[in-house]
Amino acid sequence: MAPRILLCGDPLGRLNQLFKRVQSVSKSAGPFDALICVGQFFPDSPELLDEFLDYVEGRAQVPIPTYFTGDYGVSSPKILSATSKKDENQGFKMDGLVVAHNLFWLRGSGKFTLHGLSVAYLSGKESLSDGGQFGKYSEDDVDALRALADDSGVVDLFLTNEWPAGITNRAAESDIPVDVSDSSCCDSNVSELVKEVKPRYHIAGSMGVFYAREPYLNVDSSHVTRFLGLAQVGNKNKQKFLHALSPTPTSTMSPSELSAKPPNTTLCPFTLREGAAESKKRSNDDASDSQYWRYDVSKRQKNGSDGEKLCFKFVCSGSCPRGESCHFQHNAEAREQCRRGVCLDLIIKGKCEKGPECSYKHEFQDLSVQRKPRSENANRSKECWFCLSSPSVESHLIVSVGESFYCALPKGSLVDDHVLIIPIEHLPNTLVLSPEGESELSRYQNGLRNCYKSQGNDAVFFELVSKRVSHANLQVVPVPSSRARLLPNIFSLAAEKLGFKLVTKKFSDSSEGRKYLQKEYDAALGLFYVELPDGTVLSHTLEENEVFPAQFGREVLAGLLKIPDRADWRNCKISQEEEAKLAEEFKKQFQEFDPFE
Figure (cartoon, helix red, strand yellow):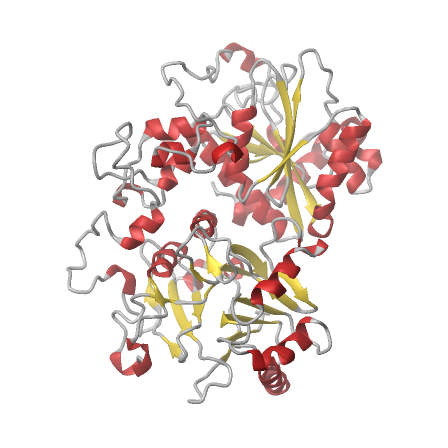
């Protein structure tokens, strides 16, 4: 059964009126699974603060799980600052920080699953400074959302406070409310984002009117997007502020259902520029481009001539979703400097503004000195268990094969969905990958994260980089999401008991964590590392001649999962027939998340 969701425009602190209406609608047409509020959530005047605080402080009950993005208004800094410090809100949480029972703050930007629906959001309004303010989104929030949008899978709901600039282009004029002629609440950044996110539904507030636009086509996607603008709670013109929606999650739809186009579908409103031909390319100084490709590098001659800009996305990740249509430099030299741990600000802006707090290199690396050769031991693949060309490979355990990697279940798995991500090439570890290899590894990691998430679990990745390991294998183990917050402490405590310490670093996304690990990796030494669900990376550099417990990662997780008897893989061996059955079952589970399916 499809989830039933209520959508609401700016509450403006009028929670008594809002929840009274919610309860009334629930009696006549409910029940509903959640309420999502866009636009200003907090009061716009002190007179409503007492009413608002009744819900925040627990004197009044929020009747339905309620999520909000408009983190600005009277007393918002004080309330949200206290919310951020709560123990249950520590870590990298994208599914809402708990403000009170049934009340969740969607901070910054993120993507999470709500009753089977994929929900992405950008909270607050554009910040004209460096961010860090309540009610304002930063450039990092925008970049993080773009990175999330690159993940496989269609976003069902996209939440923003502001309307996207240009949303009425190509729309039926008779349907456009008169009051939307003022563009003060339209945001060009949101326009750029929604073109890339390509959600099935885009919900926004802040304009003060109700507007349900005709569906429109997306570039390079088969499904349409429906935009819904909602009015303020208690508005004098009695515009609609509460809307019920019951969308079928994309994950359960057939391709034909997803690509269905209503008769009134229009072309994309964001590919039309006022006063210009539709095919005309945007100029390089377009405001939205300067937001996406953040820095002008005209002062930096190393990576281009005057007036050119580097593609921020390409330098960071080695790929760009715009491909050949991107107007900015896909500079391989800049990308390689980034891979070698050089400060991104130094590469793109020509200087670092973080000062001594920056942990990256501030000298350009000599690219004539090649990285460690990728593979010099082709003959060894005949004896290697993990090389696909080896007669020793356990092919019945393989669940997916890509271009540079394959996934397989391990022999004697810790749990049924324990997976190994293994390079096809005979590589010693996953920290010496080419840009293409790193990109593919990220796709497999994201696919496994989404697969596990659909079952209520989070993915934990760990790898031992050692001279004793001849062929890399990145281990992936699902952990119940309810126990994921225990991971940093349990790993650290286990390390201390064995006489070493894990270095803890927190990153906003996994790609930054892997860049850090590549920078830390020393080919002359070994390294053990763990990538946790909240973006934390735990690592320990092995000293020369240090004997590190090869099963450390597995043993810690066996303790967390309360299956200590399975810490040793040799205790978990089963017949080849049972292994093949487990592999087939996991293939079916992973099929919709497999980037190479």
